[in-house]
Image (cartoon, rainbow, N blue to C red; front, side, top):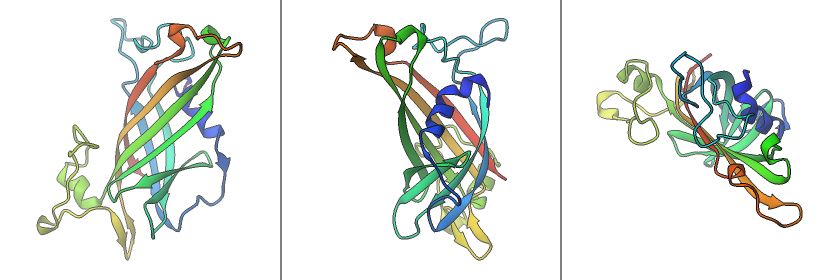
Length: 206
């Protein structure tokens, strides 16, 4: 992973390594690209996200990662596993959502207790849904951009005789820095709270 994935990597290591991932129904392994975390500069470089002007550790750079999705067939419980570390979430039949948080020290906020809260939300597309969208992610994958129409042969993801039918994921990753106050009970500096970075996630099954 690149330096831009630093916040994500921190939260991976905050989980517990497991083999194999939890859940009784594997959904697939996906190669994902995270983009759009920070605006481009005129010279082609990356600026820090405007919400994070003082946090040098937050670059918002694009990065790639692999994820394994699994679920429990008898409930909405699901798991997102990255680099062998699993975190629990939910699956509503179309979208997997998982939130995790961990303490993080930033140089500009060394006297302040801060946590990073990370949320991954991805729509899981079946073969027919992906084909209906031209094998690409729609504009709003988490807000009506992915539809199922059984009458037209467009089916939601699900278990088949050939395995779980889920060939693409589309969604977003959000990381937010939350200030929890100084050790002596004082307030944190303004730059230590509210830094939020959003990435678009697009991935295909391996």
